[in-house]
Image 1: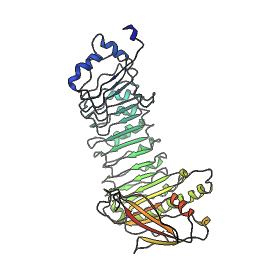
Image 2: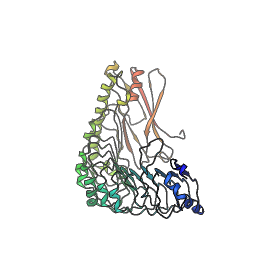
Image 3: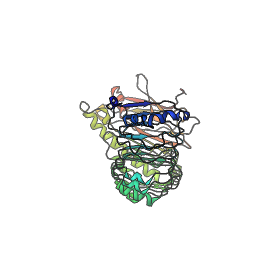
Length: 454
């Protein structure tokens, strides 16, 4: 045995069944096999059917990785407290410390492992409770609970000062404004927060501005009725998703850093503060704004205010791109800004100089000199049609100059619509194509194209 003292052991057991339990125990238990356990570096057991791995604590001094993905019958994690070097090495990311039991759909008990763990993925398991000792995992940066049955987020989570990503999706999560307030006081490193389908979440705490590094906030399907005004202080926030928040009534001013904002199917939403802040910080940004099927907006003054803000954002994007284009040799196209917007409504905004209501085609006279040409902002009104979303529908634009050949462009993806909607967008790349074929007049024809070719 002494000749093995400098060796490492790797165990790969694919598709192991519970009837093979003696094999596992022979690997990790007993007098002589326990010697191998001390040398064990990595265990890989994808798609296996065991309920537990071993009973007693093992001296897993060298264990660095364990893969239990899709072990759908696994009910209990082994005691890995002696795995002092536990780390998950994948694709040569030798410093990545990670444990994942993702899709182990029968897993109910998850004892906290070593404080070396940086990534803990319990998604799609039956785990119902996080032990209070999770607050001792001071190196954890990522905690994924989506699809688990965790009902409470323990206050000890606020001790995870390095936590950058927290994701949960479960209607049974019992959390309120005051509990979140306590968590936010400690999670100063948090960059990504998902609290989806949280039917018990009605309010968000004012101290959300403590999350100064937050880049992505997704509250889809929660029961929040409003967001605090302090959200505008999150100057790193780029993504805010409130889809299917059916009780959301009002939106405050948003931070200028927002690139993607979505409030689709917010059927109670009536009041939206001015979105003028989105017109700033436009260098190299694609800004997407969507209010699909938030139909109460179309009934009041709010929609007019949103349209004014969007117009300002579009003009800001165009102006910035003119500067980028003038330094084309040194600045690449990824510095361009583009904007996409969808709103309920049946009227082209008044800011558009060229309009037609009787046709999906339009001809536009262009300036004599391309140097005076800044670009186009486009807008169309779409009525709902059965199967558009199912067949991957997109807005299609065919364009040509007088006497020139037709060219086509497809980009804007259409969601399922419950009523007429206005789409508005600005695409600098299409502008560049137009500049390359410049002529006195320009013809556009719009249609909806699906993946089936219809």
